[in-house]
Length: 317
Ligand code: SF4
Ligand code: MG
Image (cartoon, rainbow, N blue to C red):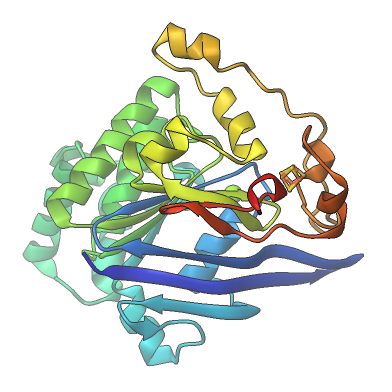
């Protein structure tokens, strides 16, 4: 299938007290129609900023965002409105993003109203349909967000996103705040909707545990840059970057034989400040393989095997 979203050399810098925060520093990737890219990294690595810049909440500092063959960075008002019809965002904390004073029906109906899709009885029917689509029911339309559990609230957030029939959804840590048992349900719901509607996802997460099931490809970010990117199957079978290996070692594996082979790697220290990142490879302060060259040169993201990209001097030969 064809590429729906292409991000080229995207940079998003914030000018803050004490310097320049390079939240997104030369990030490139593409997502094909109907596929999911998992974007993974610790908090502060720039994954949310990447999502927010794509959807237009931030102006990019540099680079290009191409959606369905059209440049969507720096759009006109009309262009932005057209793009907004095709892209939606799902947030980490559905409670914070749902207006507590609005009924669930009106929360879901907001997008329908803004884009003038349906009115009156048709609008209500559409809201009921959306509630059922996400595993809730029509009686829920008259209730308020606080009457629901965390998992149900995320279902409401998903129904709200689905209301305008988007083609592309950016899910910013949609399951991080939920109990593990509920996480799988929400991931399954997102996967079913993807299959039914042909949706394309950018799925942002801080660990690799649930990303595997939903993602076709995974990109691992560290301090504003992608350090490894490949298919989900390849990443889990053959992680190459020391940071990916550490992240993956924290993911429980159902098969105890594999778990034994995969030793838990504890990352030393915290993520350095993105305002003053280490020279050369930004991961070098926490990397047990760090060499002299790692201090001097930033490793480029290089294709080391078919479709497997790594930014590490160990593989930059
Ligand atoms: Fe470690 Fe050097 Fe590779 Fe960075 S480039 S991950 S410091 S070995
Ligand atoms: Mg975030």
